Length: 584
Ligand code: GLU
Image (cartoon, rainbow, N blue to C red; front, top):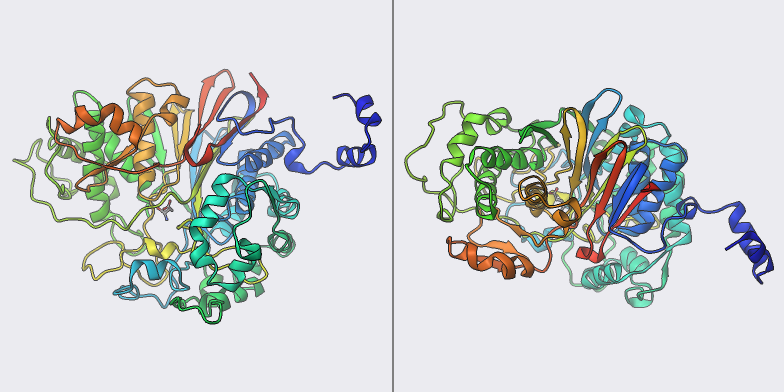
């Protein structure tokens, strides 16, 4: 449409105004609908959400780098994907710095309050903990955003929050995913007065197609921009969070048990996002960088790849078995390294991989696989699989969100962030427009003597988040990650296997049907996987349970010569949004 046509239209004044001061998230000619694949130059982004991808794109176009765009997009996701992530959540960020040719990571995982002990969650029904003040961890996201920008970014937190604040003011269009997530949470949202007021206006989920605005969140972002992270970490926003955690605003007359939490303002003021060395694994001559504990992502993806590497061939059977073994070890050994000894180097050693790989035969191994002994002393093939002890995984849901961004300099971010359950702990901080996380449900509830993931004072719960960057000859080849609780690990692993072993193109590697084996008797699988591979794998002794969807991945592939392919899900969780700065 030309300017002349615009001038002739009836709404000239309005249009002219919007041309003069366009909102940052709609300034670019990005398509008005989500597309899952985009290829081009000058920077790229993939998130689950068009608005968030547009925010990242506009930051890139204005000269921001990948970290700037990732933080701005994460804040935007706090508006449009508020049930998956937000400022009161946590996450893990992996960053490739093109100039230094080095991978950095930032741990923004929530922490337990100092008053929490190994028995604090004992005997509490999981479902009751999900909607409680007790499960709210000290938020990590804001400290992580701030640290990422100060270390690796070019813009201030203030600037990075601007587009999200605008998006919260202007609103976004409710899609079927947002509507379905609100409906699925309606029973608990209606019992918390602040949450019902925000997300069940008029007593019901906002209809598909309506515009959802969150002026409280816009104000919160703006005040955070003005006052800085200390407003949360020890300041008055922190006091409001503590008050809400200790005394959740339960609707009078509700019979729901909503336990209060243990968080104090001092827990907030002592919170730190942490820089950690990335976990590195070599696979097929590539370097795979992931997140170190307290995430089990890097070590479990890495161990499974190490196991696959020593097998004579890699197919879906081997993928499932390597994952089974890696999960047995993850469950036994991974916790917050500040609280427990994690034998990370041995878990990722070649000797250990060989010892574990030896257990993989032609048929699915008996359940459960026992953890191995990453003790530095390895026999090429121990006799027969040792008897295992059953593991009980907490239920997994499709929560969380993952984004990837690359800039024109070749810097790359893979960032997974979350408030844990879809809808977090269902408690909106009154007047502030954001939900609290229930990340502490990621701890083992116990009693479980010796479990590395029991709660503890200041401890970070074990995570499965697996933001991953793969380098070839020191340069980025792939960036990938996904939501989905412990299925995050298998989703990332399966995408890597699809791409690197099965030769699928990246869009195909993401779209392919998924299965998740986490040392459980049956493997969770999507219908498409069962239809296509069920018979052949059942003949090898595998059993499957149907699950509607596993993961909602986003990824990048660097095609050489500065060309990048950004990829999102074509259909899972409503499909994602891939954008590039310059197409083709
Ligand atoms: N809390 C999960 C984890 O850290 C992420 C949320 C999810 O996807 O379940 O592993």
